Image (cartoon, rainbow, N blue to C red; front, side, top):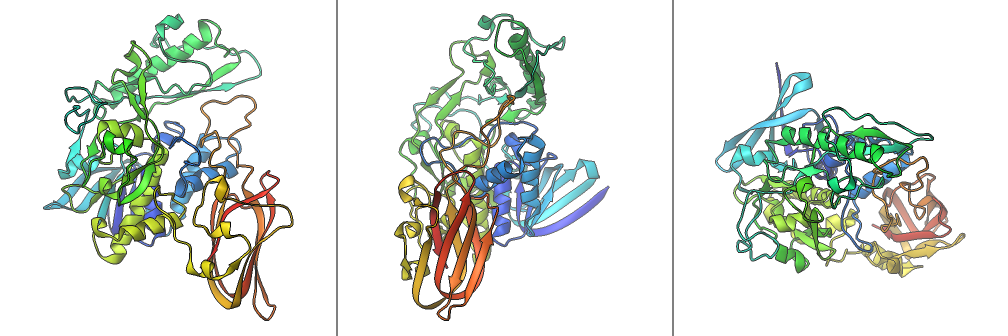
Length: 562
């Protein structure tokens, strides 16, 4: 056996979207980061192994941006055939591109060395390489979902449903229990030009009539999230037991759709079925603050808000598939957005343990709104940025300058509700052709500059000024009605593409007082958020749009100079 030792600033456990975004954000902000993932691919529930689409906050202009939007737009650009292995490669490429990030796949954390209430190192086993990895770090971010470091470090955590009286909530049961939301194995189907037969395995369950699937919509556009069990079992230690049962149900449901009644799937075939269950809930850390149903309903207006949620409090019954008294979940209303504080991502009793994802410090009721993956992704970016700031300032995550963190996140295109992004002093100093592009608001149609062909946006100074960076935010249609990947594959797919509203080709020109010209030419932009580092001394800067990915007008939220 081989052993490799590492020393760094941050060790991230778990390579789902929260862990990936946490690690990328930390690395981009200059600290030495390790990402330990126990699977061969990144993405967690969004990966090819599970294939849940990435959901987030409801409502107009509430889509999550920052790294998660970067990942989605990159996927639309590269992955025209909507292949899940290509989506996985997009995530892999983004991690591997960061010089400050070391990626360890197929690597399971199984031990931690402690010094009192501080984690000194973790030990992980990489099975395919027969190698032990020992990682010493200043901070450890548990983004594993199941909160593996809680079991290894003695960190305080919660499991199951609180009682109504524990936090004065109305959603929980009268008596606390160890029941959770369950887990699901999904399946995907593909349309073909001709009729397809299906022969189920002998061990699959039989559902011969629609009455055998009460309250369970099973049209072909469904992603079959309701094939869910495990909430009455142990959602960690019974994972394989759940998988075995879920596979019997999945094959039985498809058998029903194909062979019992007309479900409009004669020409459809089973494309894929998941052997790794996607989890909704297990251990939740207890942090410096526990978010409750009451916090959700009052919009989470915390001083240290660094991210937000906006999914309904979607509380699945623990019985899951075997709940037969009605719809298998209750959609308790929640405002969108509602703010999430940094304190809910800092361990209550382990000094250098932080966390992001579905395992943050929330009650079961609040978790039902905060657990979806786009929310988890922006939690990860906020946490990675916070840790980098703590390392740079030589202070604890809890004691960093929260206003500086909020401004940094918003500068990186992470929307934070109830906060305004500061516009650069240099941009405010200039005469601007369109003040809307320097109002600090990077979403909402009322904040969008719309240019026609031949029109430009321009800054002009009285004297030559030094420009070090140009910030651009384009319109990627935050209200588009599709996620990162489809749940099935019809013969013709018209969605899941780069938004028409994105500007594709543009030129930026800078002129000094002597008529000298500096320029940037971009011919194939496919991102919403773009930074150009420059070293110009100019008195005029012009943004000249050339083409879009389909729209007849040029839409831009921010054009700013530093």
